[in-house]
Length: 312
Image (tube, rainbow, N blue to C red):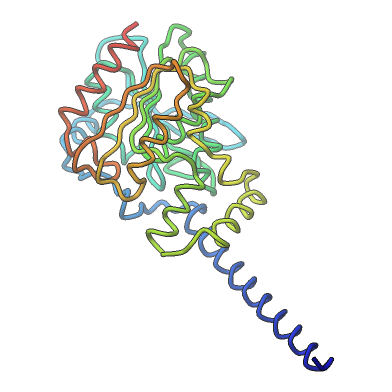
């Protein structure tokens, strides 16, 4: 091969590689903005339940106290609703991706009717809380722990259950093995949480955009390491559950195409051997719709679980 031809081939190849890198970089910035940057408009898959949902209307009539804590330099907001009858039992209700405490009021009412104090926080980068980057539970778990510590400091006799929906479910699972989580937290309920952020984003890239994980998801993970300090695989519910010692109830819909139902089984299998665990699969329920699809079974299962493990 002539030197001139070889040189042209190298230049051509280098140009193609550079172009592909530029395309990947542009796509990475675009999808990072979609997936990680705060946006208070919920995606279609995780829109809140109907405003006519009866429990929402009832919850709106309850007296709420606005609470504030500061964690990781961010001011975080929450509603606190005391039980109708004085009790030491409290449920922290954690919302999902691009939602807020207002979108999960029906769950607040559910636990209120079951006789619990209820705390509904806004995650960082959501609702009335500060923050601009969504962390898929990686940093949110620290905020849940901070809220649990606040409740415990104010009432050392408190007994806390963590409940989470979707990303909130992944968050409470990720909190389950943290040494900083106070002993006052004695049970966990998760509804349609993903196994880890890598798997969920890889699934979304394929199902929503028909994009393979390489190179985009790898680039997103690398960019997130630079901007937030963690790779996608580090936000892992399954890893945390493998060390969790608290009783846990795992819930999912069998028609969930946003967080695939297979992740329910991944999470269930991951729970540390010997740890009490229960599973509820709601037939016909899409993502975050298990409660709406079969409210009686949902309520009965949760009530039975709480009486079994949190009736202190």
